[in-house]
Image 1 (cartoon, rainbow, N blue to C red):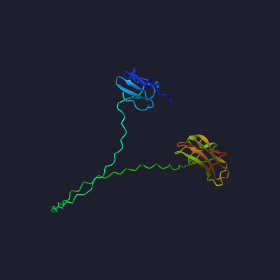
Image 2: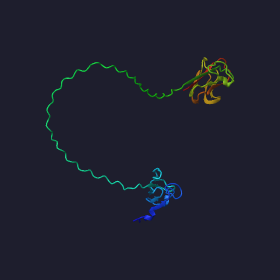
Image 3: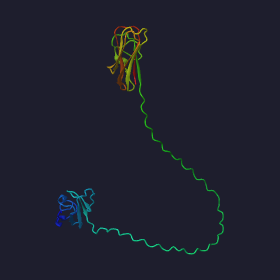
Image 4: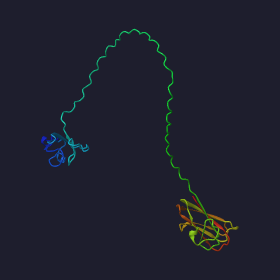
Length: 266
């Protein structure tokens, strides 16, 4: 069995003041005191007890003191013993007698009162119209799919490695900037097709390479001798405001054979 703590070790003080530095209760380091210690404070003429397990009760003047060092709170004793337990409820008393007294005589019937006036009161004012609550705004619908079709066309009888414009149909250009098309929306190129209206197809191979912002992409297509149409599939991601161009490569001069390249995106 653990020996009891001697009473002298459970009594601290007396201390001059409850609060402040120096010889005060607040300045004591409770690490050196046991839980349940009692202290006397002269300036308030009160006893305090130490609860080392309570570190959450807010300090309150001289009633509840947080030590400057160590755990717990000092609580001021207010005097008086604890309230005793509530006594048991007493037995219910016996029910009183319920004998009824004799019925009194019936009183005489009173005279009929005068008929009241029947004038209708004025119609009340019309109440104000209630305001219904506006429903919440519905969620924004999903963005529909974007699409892109750009047609570059020119006479492929021009020099090798020239650039063609959108619906140009004329001569090729050595200045790529003049032939660039600015993409209005973000989308993805999925195919490149080439056609010619020349009877019997082209007389020499014609190759078109798709370029974005002045650089070649992996998407190109060739219309071979005697062919009228060809389609190449591929994927090229485009951001809004990217600049498309098409570089034309022919092996020989092909006078008056108009060839069109369609860029198809979605």
